[in-house]
Length: 131
Image (cartoon, rainbow, N blue to C red; front, side, top):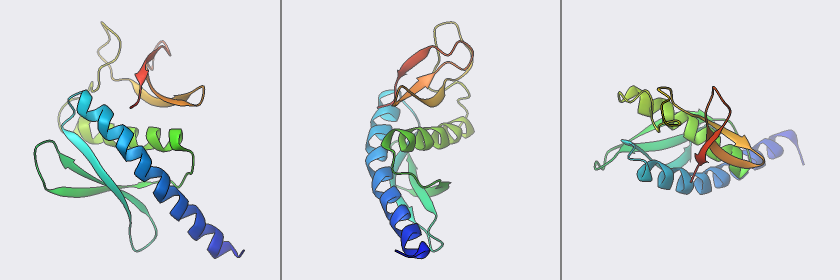
């Protein structure tokens, strides 16, 4: 297999992986009352992976990106959640989705023991699983 074919295979595999990640992240964001909702992932003309997002209750979509290619579902969930959390911050909620009781900072999206979680950046305590 040539290098170009390997790159195409990686990008297409990543696209499929992110499509599965969108479902988990969308569920998590909706459950936590986020304004931003992921709607899908597309390839642009340069084979960059872009996430399509919309605001809760609105049909209009826009694209954010780009996501780094991966076939690891848990890493894809973290990459997507992290990107969308930044967009949620842009909407004015700088602590979304809420950390541990008494903490005024947001949790970080991370993979712990092979599973995507929200984790407190101060104590490293797990807040919750993503999705």
